[in-house]
Every structure is written in C-alpha cells, then in structure tokens.
Length: 546
Image (cartoon, rainbow, N blue to C red):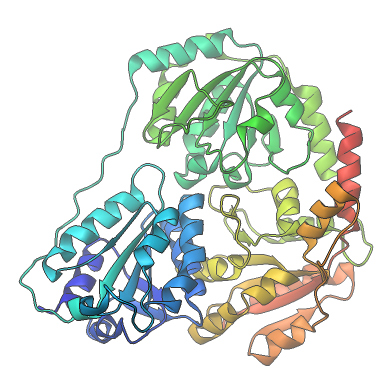
C-alpha cells in the first residue's frame, strides 16, 4: 500500500470524515489518494480558514478536526489556527507537507524547520521518517490531542515518504480512558469544605462547556443553591436565566460580579483554565479556599493553589458529588442577592434603545430574541466580543463560542461555517468587527463554494475598536486604530453572498430573520454600531464598583 493511502486509512479509523486544506506540490500524493477515499476534502481559500474550521470541528465534536497544508508558506499560514486550538483547548491534528528527506539537512526551496516552529504552539509535533510508523504516529497524535486538556498536534510528511510502499496496517484506537472518578476521601473533604463555607461560589470555565456538563452542574446548583459565575468560554453550562447567576466575568474591567469573588470564602472552579481569566484578577479580598475540578491538573500559579484537585471526567466527578450531597451543604440564604440583583439590572438595562447607529446592548438583545436556545453564535475578537461576553445570554453549552485563550481575530467566520456544515438544521451566526471581517473575508469564498448558509453580522465602526477602547482607558487617547471606509455589504454581495446594510435600529431584527431564511450561501449583515458606549461602560463600572 502507498504511504499516502495508509495515512488516510489511519485517519478514517480514528473517525475522520473531512479534511480542510489547500493543495500543494509537497502534499500532492495525499491529494491524489483522496480521489479514491471516502474522506471528504474541503478546498479552502486560505490555510488559516482550514485551521479555524478544523478547530471548530474539534470544539463541537470533541474529535480532532484535521487540516492539511503544504510546506513553507502553507505551514506558516496554518499556525494561527493551530495555536488557537492549543490555547483554547480544542483537539486538532494538522498535517503538513515537507521536502524530500534528502534535502532537509541543507538550505533548499521552501524548506524551513516547520516542526521547531510548531512546537511552542502544539502539544506534540513530529516528522514521519518511515512509512511503517504512520499507524503509530496517527494513533499517538489523536490520543495526545484529546487527552487531558485538548489541543493541537502537527504531523509533517515529507513528499518522498508519502510515495513509499508499505505493508504496515492501521492501529484501531482503543477508547481513551481519562480518570473517571476521584477518590472518596477527596469528595468527603470537598463536602466538609462546602458545609463549612459561608459564601461559596461555583466558577465555570471552558472545560465545563467542552464536556457539556450542563446536567450535573445544574443538578448540583439545584441541590445546593449556590451562586455561580462563568468565564467567556464557560457560557451556557448554566442558562443566563438561572436565578442565582452572577453572569460572565473576565471583561478586563472591574465588573459587578467581582464583588462576589472578593467576599467568597470558597471558590469551586469547574473546568477553569487560567488562560481565560488570570486568578490574580479574582483571587482577591478575603482569604479563600479553592477547589479545582477539571480534566487536567491545575497550572502552578501563586494566586491559584487549590486545596483539592479532582482530575478526570468533569461530568462524572460532578455526578459523584451530587450523589453524596446532603442537607448540610444546602445554602438557602441569599448571601449574594444584592450583588446578583445589581448585576442583573445592569445587564438588562437600556437594551431597547432605538437610537442609530445601534447600541451594542440593542444588537445583542435582538440577536438573542431571534435565535433559538440551540442556535449557535460564534464571536470574533474585538470590542464586540466584550459586549457578547457580558450581554449575550447563552442557555446551553456549545451555543456561544468566544476565543479567550489565544484570542485571534479572523476565526469567527470559518468557525461559524464549520458549525453550520456540521449542523445544517440550526441557525449559526458569526459576529465580527469590520477589522476582523476584512482580515478573514477569504473564508466567504469557501462558504460560497460549499453552499453553506451561515450568517455574518459585521459591527461597523471603521476602527480597531477594542484597541481604541483599551488605549483610551489607559492613555485617554488613541493611536492608529482607524480603518478606511469600505462598503462591506457591496463587497460581500460582489463576491456572491447575500448582503444588506442596516440603516435603522428597527430594521435589524427583520433583516436578521431574512438572512437566516437563506439556505443556499452565506449572508452578510453590516450594522453600524455606536462604540461611544465602550467608554461609557468603563466609567459606569468605575462608579458601580466604588
């Protein structure tokens, strides 16, 4: 069997049905092998689009998304999406071409040391130097990508190795067993800590969302009555309508819910990873005990030294805790009621403002009113991301995606496209700034070619809005953040999308329903946004936190 055929067979055994990428000379053998294989190949307009699509595939399915590129510039174009997968905890396997092994030791055409380049942004990176090891390499890659906190793996396949004949056979993956239960002693200690605490707080992170721990987490809250907060990437595990929700934290400003962290004597971190929000930002105020529940051990940090670490399957650990709960752990008294009510009122207030350009709160209220609970919103990076984190009410895991680890601009449109491809019967919306839209506009070409009808909502302010906001907070002025005016709706329409520019606040919701009705290709809505609200929020929260 040819090595490139064996590679595809090994991927298929591990559940791969789709590869995203760009063909090149040094991956030509794999491309030709794909002609005779059941794995679908989606030709992307840019390798970055391929990596972001694979990353979203991993986030949604918990099976590594696979992307493919050639050597040199093909590999460098992948690296942003690969890095995001690692820092944001999404399983991904990237396969890159390479020159013949006979010229790797010297300067030659397009030859760079890609493996050394990828090592800092992956869990594992390796070169296949013999066709016979392909089954082992693929099996190891998938195991590493999915184990503990998921992330990216990179496999380099030199073009001469891809051509070799081999008798090697595929390795069928055995089910990977993470820790399925924690010790009885740890659970008993946890219950004693919870029983003795006065103001416990449940703090949910990306791991809780990734493992879709909604049912056991909500059962825990129903039994205990604890107040709960969540990071940008932990949205949806509990619904925004939960009566003791303190909502999303990590804005970068001192928000209202931070007062609960200041007063809390016990913080139960479920699926929390410190890339989401530094513990130095919330481990403040009174001395507190920390409990860590996650698929991977806690990172060492002076502000995050858990008294208990329960490592393994988050849903299973939470179910084991739920089975041991008694009336002693119930917290009936509304110990954070004032903080919760203030946060609730602040989030809900002024969401019906009819002024134009549209206020961020109004845009997000209209989106939330239009989308069903199971529909998906994918946020790009920019000022809109902060508003989505604070205002948009997710009600299920994996229905609101916000990159808050690597935080790369340009990931929302490829991510939303893959979500819609995987789940064609639900609505999927990408929210971008005009800067992020232009940065990844090439992904629309893939959506048009694949006839994927996702919706892109562009918040237009002609600035790198988040950078301007942060510059103004720190320096009371801003520098070089302006973007040239471009008719983005016309641009989107000219390349084949449905498109519309919003001209009044009351026109947005009907336009969104119109956009969601299309089932043939992407639709772009351009919404002028009033980002004077950014600094108003900054000063407003300063007053609230006094």
